[in-house]
Image (cartoon, rainbow, N blue to C red; front, side):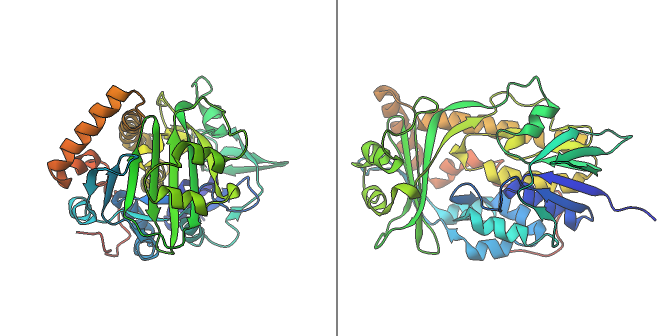
Length: 391
């Protein structure tokens, strides 16, 4: 009798749960080890591009997520004074990439992914460490407290500060500060009516997006020294930096409480890893290719990773060959966009704004070209059921 292949996923975030669900559907016996006491996602909302939605279609939840999500309609890019530099078209984006861009709370996606797993597959309050990456002759081993588990596959989905990555590649320098910090809120804003938009200032960014449930997701970023924090509270810091920006920024700040504001410095892997696997252990998501959030592709690429990993199964060199070139290129592009959006000099900002405005006059299709090769990605295998984004 052949024993079912075992997979241990270290990390219960979006990438880890998606990998566990995809492997489970392919016949693996899956265990997810999450160090937090519950599957409460860090963060507020997540934007899912057509590439990630097609990956979720493989898991059978793509259409459900589309129905639950707030659809980002027409919007664009603005200056702090409110002038529109460019306009985006949801219809043009859907036509170009075969599907919409949607926005939803991270908790919603985590709940839907966790529901795809069998009872008992997720263990919370489980601080795991890679004891042995394994090789073709022996299984990998993971220690959890005083217990030790064996598996034919271990998936490191433990985020930007991944301990699994450090164990596999101890000479790699690891994540570095990207040069800016971020704030995020997800709150109700009474009476708020506005088009989804992002605003670029001098060394500062603000974005505001309505969700389907009536709440507003807003985020900000600013060039500051690593580790810096507000002397009072982060809402007060946002008021100092963005309080005089165009509507609806003041309304969002007025509706937010200090405890609603999350702040995190942004770190990324400036140097790509030599591979995404070693022995029987593999990395995905931020553990493999942490990138700035400027393309909104961090979580999207983690979901792609999950589907490609399940497709290749135990053939980890094939997974690395599939994923490393693509994610490295996207991460580098995210760095370039971050430099553009976070430009601080007056002359550089003036040139940037002029170029963006000129690009916009050429039509939304030209502006959307930046996502060619990203949002049009398709999975290597399908679930067998047609979906709304399938052509």
